[in-house]
Image 1 (cartoon, rainbow, N blue to C red):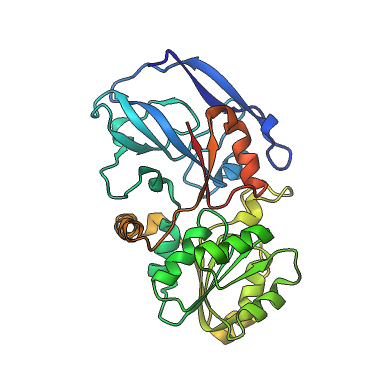
Image 2: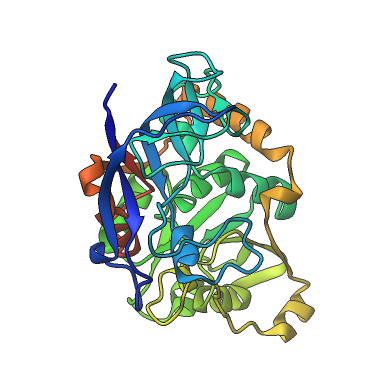
Amino acid sequence: MHTTHRFVRLVRRPAGLPSPDDFTLAQAPVPKLQAGQVLIRNTHFLVFPGLRTLIGGETRDVPLPPLRPGDTLFGPAIGEVVDGPLKKGQLVLHLQGWRDYATPAADECRPLEGILPDPIAHLAQGSAAYGAFTRLAEVQGGDTVFVTGAAGAVGTLAGQIARLLGAARVIGSTGSPDKARRLKRELGYDAVVLRGAGPIGSQLSEAAPDGIDIVLDTVGGEQVTAAVHAANRGARFALVGALDGQLSPKRAGGSAPAVVDTYRLLTKGIRIAGYNGVDHPDVEAEWEARFGDWLRAGNIQFPYTAVHGMESAPEALPRLIAGRSFGAAIVEL
């Protein structure tokens, strides 16, 4: 085992969107275990846009602490137990990513017991989409579903999940023509609305001439505005993300305003609800069981963009925010 390890620290709170200069790769002795802790050698960790909110300091109602200059970044990670009360060599899931070696408490680690065929798939962000489609905006046979931010960690899984649950037509949105092609060619999206290629509302009318029954929104902003106008009577909206605020240079990641025509909500009987996994504690196990079955059967893909090595990690969040990932962004150590 190494005597030192590397980790990524926040240098300063960004003025606008984060840049690689806002982070630094530091080195220190491998931490010593305290009572009840486990020493874990990390192998993979997730880069997630919520870090923008934690760095920006707008953490009201967020169940995670803010990140201040000098703090080490954190997030979902997979690693191998080196020492402590858990079995040596056991792969575990925990929240101390962004470092070579982590020391979470034993009760903060979840042993990975082969529920999914590939341990890396435990970093997939499909639980929120699955929960939204089964608890809030229940997919019914024949539905037309619109997924905003379809090329992201949630969206690349959401379209596939909607189809597996019975959706007849699945439409996504993205800001990249290349990603739009991949969504249709690789993930089965029927049509893709392209930001910057004309009014979203006009593109939605063309992509969904018979209207939209379900919206799974990871973005907010103008896309929600347009989706309300394109919605059928009785449409269901599930809000699972706020990328419009997290990826905006004018915001700090804690807000994503949208103009919504409440008259249309009233006359169309549209339901809008935000999905929070805390409110649905039974979803995670159900999702993992179905996700594992779908992966083994070849019915679903887990798209992710690999970032190779801790030395590349300081650039990982800025690259994600700049739209240089397809699916999840995962650092491989």
